[in-house]
Length: 82
Image (tube, rainbow, N blue to C red; front, side, top):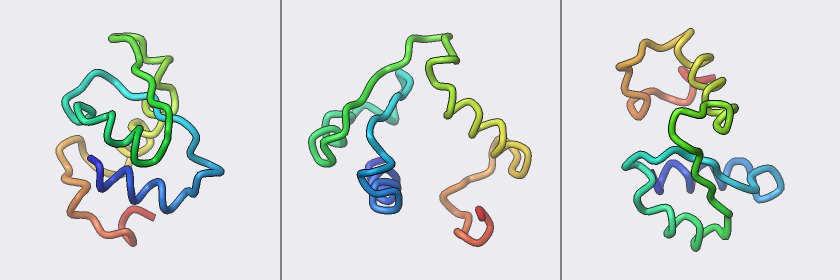
């Protein structure tokens, strides 16, 4: 998770990436490392309140139009994702 956020941060720059809103899942157990390393405030959405994660939910919906649910995105090349 940290490597993915690091890549995202380096791609978007600090002008575009100002906060993270995440769910209470195990991927974000080390949220303090991200918060401290990149000085990005992190917020946790309440369980079962999808509107607090609007961009995430929308992105997941768009992603699923092209890749089935169990697709390992880590194995996809950037060309396949764009």
